[in-house]
Image 1 (cartoon, rainbow, N blue to C red):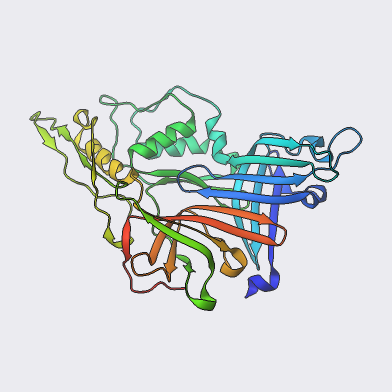
Image 2: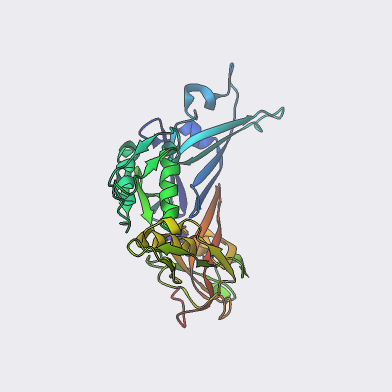
Length: 371
């Protein structure tokens, strides 16, 4: 395998505006890197360095290399293939001096570049603009961070005489609010070094599945641990009404499907809970339908899986927000899953990935999972 021949190498770029390769002093002091990619929240990172004290101060603290606001790009090269794990901003650092020589540490913590959208509260109005157009306008203001907007068109087109979308929070909070009311997700994900996709749309289950996670398969086993659970109270049904604008008759909203398509299971968990749509009576039919779909879509998946892989044995970087196959866990839990969260832990001679998977029920749709 090419990964075994060439090994795994860490890529670390740091800079105020344009991140550049880290200096020798920085890389030689590196102890551990942790990166978390999460489909439900912002990605984050934490880097630990050993500190050596000079005459006046610790050398790594001089020059402001790790000052808050500094941009950091972390990636790995598996074999010959580069993979960017996060493009982020330093938000915090912590110094832990020690009485023992060589035991002082500097821990640098940060979040992906979405944190730059959460720094300034605004009061704005957006007349005659649907949510996906507003989203594109907002992201365009952050082009210096390599953000490329990838919006999915929304169905509701607000007319100024009926409704004017208003922002009374930061750009990030406003985008998240727009995403929630449409049953969408919003995240920023690196495409390559210095370029990031800002995605605004339904959970993307149309990706090519990643190499399978295999257990109980002898030499083909590539997971250290894997467990599953099913929560019958996770999915929800909806009940509500809207007022027909001409006759003023109250009309019930029918049961509508989730935006999580295509389905991943043969036996989805039935909803035991019902939520009341309290705001739909004041909405038009299109808005009421969107609210009903969003409520079903925003409910968590009923089946989750958690585990850990050794990256050398797995041979790949497991990516959050994409599909992955599971095999060897039995017919109920084999099949394809959506990767909700991956935590990368990298140190000298070690690279492990802890993960969380999810889907809407049990039973695989296909008889086999391609390795």
